[in-house]
Image (cartoon, rainbow, N blue to C red; front, side):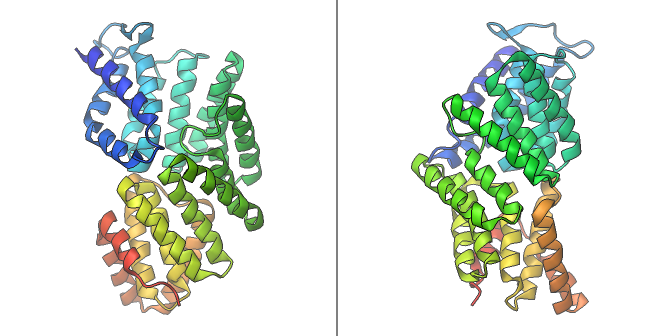
Length: 358
């Protein structure tokens, strides 16, 4: 019975993955959320055949073992886990599967890429992710699997970005993008590659190169009806407008981004948006608002176990120091605590209610 359960939820997750970047993607994320307990049970069953007293090896589909089905399920759920902050809870299940995979096999490369995705982009544990992404890339290169190589290069590029190596990240992402194009697609497993390249370029501080990349990414996303990618691009392009001194336009773009993101219940983007709202208000004599927003962002990050890193950390520390100087210690602590006490939805609503910088 559990084999049929695993087969059903694998088929469902792989079909859903193809819908997540379409106009009704938010509804599909909600469908996946409603089945989260079933996905957990299916993953645990897929790893059980290697445990003492566990079930014997069997195919849950023709030619697909339980372990292979589990690795495919983890790969299909990756984007859902990112948006809904479920990477930390599923990391033990993914690592249990990885322990059952034979060296040098495609099934091992697939689960290592999933683990690297959780450890790096989801949890910020980039050094742990590095060795997993490298092993996955090595295996797929040895097997000559072009699609696998493109995925591993993407993971490796994301890890390099998280570790602050922008040049390496750009090179890896460009190589991944070229492979995806050869295979007949421009998109990686989650993001249009041009959007990832724009993010890294912005992180380097090269705003002149990043802006046309965001322009390209937004045009492509709107053509596809990929609302989530549009929201992501608007938020980060708005950050460029703020850095260029156009606070009012930056705030407008950030609001538009959040309004698009709210239906997705995107935990990861929520804390980034709250950080950006706080930064946008920081220089406009609104220190209590800023402290509340930073406190709310901290609470969301703790919920998913994701520290700040890279450029966000630099801007965060600078802005928090500025707010501390402008508020009495008691007022700062009270505003921060008020922000931490908000739910994610309350914090986003609070941010949207703030008047734009004059």
